[in-house]
Image 1 (tube, rainbow, N blue to C red):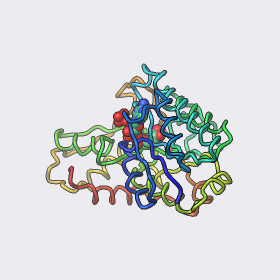
Image 2 (cartoon, protein in one colour; image 1 turned 30 degrees about the vertical axis):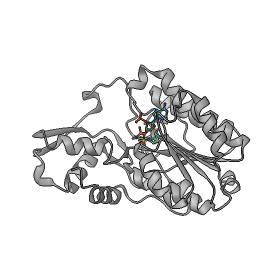
Image 3 (cartoon, helix red, strand yellow; image 1 turned 180 degrees about the vertical axis):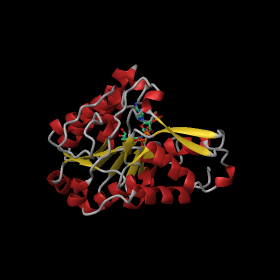
Image 4 (cartoon, rainbow, N blue to C red; image 1 turned 120 degrees about the vertical axis):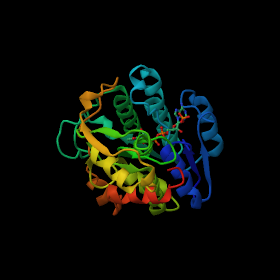
Length: 298
Ligand SMILES: NC(=O)c1ccc[n+]([C@@H]2O[C@H](COP(=O)([O-])OP(=O)(O)OC[C@H]3O[C@@H](n4cnc5c(N)ncnc54)[C@H](OP(=O)(O)O)[C@@H]3O)[C@@H](O)[C@H]2O)c1
């Protein structure tokens, strides 16, 4: 099998990628501080030594609000790093798998976004991720960019763990009902990536070069944060620990944040399912699986 280099093994997605890619054999998995996207020379050395046939980049600067202050850092990690990975991949006939976000859209369309829709990010995080997409696209390499949304794990802090924690300390929760997108369990995203690499076979470069592009890949269906929170509480493996007795709707404008977020950023994943002949499960089904598997923390 080809050699794989996974960057970002401790992130929500990277952790699951490490598990799902393990059966592929030759997988070198790294994360900060072994690698630092702010200092690409170190990564360049690792690439020259490992000469991976497939690079999977699960690193990202994901602090949406902090990015408003740290735009240089966000752009270096989310745009310049991916560009240099793409350049290396191009020069060495390697494949680059990369991930992007629904936050490249402004959320004003009112129906799920396709890959044909014009991005218009509202904040620095979305802008830096879009710049990363464009930088990779500008390099002639074998790449797949999966734009995903509302990624959660139960291992690292996420919306799901926050709701479960709040529900153990507060009598009432107020959750916004005007933010809508596709909740995506990071394990499903990792498994989809592994399935694609398995389909790509022993010589992934040609197979992926033919299919290179941006694809929306997120949990099927979409919902509001409020309904998502209600489903999390319904599926809580230890509901007896909840102190919350009511979940009330709120508005995004009730909770001003440094970064503006798109309101309706649901993704239409039709292009992905047509190209690769599968799709991620319904978000409720994935959430039920996630809660059943990861019931040791809550
Ligand atoms: N989370 C979401 O809701 C969401 C939504 C849409 C799209 N996405 C995209 O999905 C992908 C995976 O996201 P995720 O939620 O798994 O992210 P994550 O949990 O924040 O993981 C990102 C990883 O990158 C590492 N990293 C940060 N700065 C680095 C640097 N300078 N050098 C090397 N590594 C560095 C982080 O290390 P530290 O933990 O030490 O910082 C972490 O291990 C990203 O491309 C993200 O933009 C995420």
